[in-house]
Image (cartoon, rainbow, N blue to C red; front, side, top):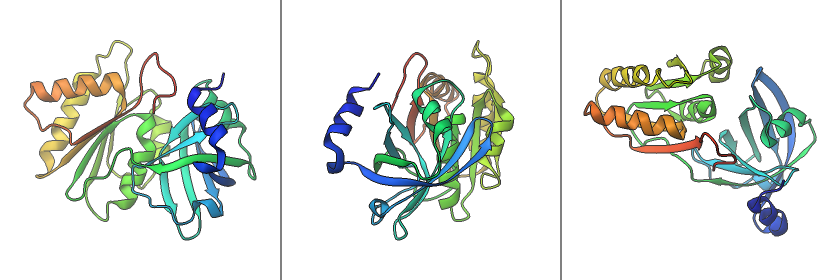
Length: 236
């Protein structure tokens, strides 16, 4: 069923939407696909690592993705899409073909790479794209990731060589892995002075990790962004 936002974007059409064409698709892992989009409508855009796109799917649902990069002169961008489950986004990305159209709003502000100093990023599979985008823009600054995951091999493939320091902790249904996540974050925060902490991914994990950090009197995150939440779909 189409979402209210999707119906609105479909009606507004060219007033808000950028039009692009799929130039290339590649399977990064069994649950990740890379998609390159091109088109004149992508030229001249202002992009910051961590910004988002809101893609209007053929089903008239809207789903949000983080571009890995953006070439405003050539009119090209690249997405890394996680598609582990049956969902409108999963059906779209698995059925996508070279030459297909893609319409979206953006880039828009979502979460930004801190302006200076080393960075510790918390997240999960849905944070792979922002980790890659941050790593590409870090310019030699240290970036460490601490992620919860149910698919370690796939996530490591998605992060690639660009994200050189990634600690992956196996997700457990009983949440007993959360103290280990806080332990790992504490260790990474202690490695370098002046480090910035950014929390992304699952809303429930963000909440509990923040509480764990606070209980240990550790630095507060400078930014948080929930990409998904248990029991909800289409979280922006």
